[in-house]
Length: 99
Image (cartoon, rainbow, N blue to C red):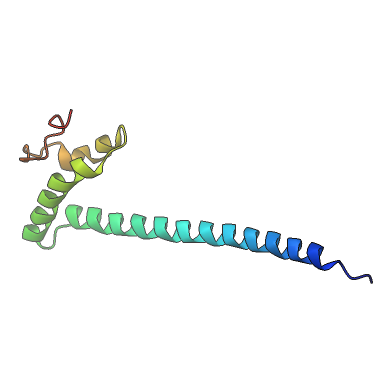
């Protein structure tokens, strides 16, 4: 069995490190996505299954105030028509103001 030259071994280790760092990045993004899905599911669950109607109303009002400024991609607001659709106009949050 012949030994590989040190520069070749270093190059192989660097490539292995790059592959592992890429895998780690994918795992971190997947974890972040999972967290976002779960927190979103909790919020939607609280809106749909109000055990505390006052809290659910405050949550809905907060979402109506915050979502329009948060949703920046074309069509994203349509995903929340059930929440935003019947929302009264919020001062300072009119979508046409900034245009």
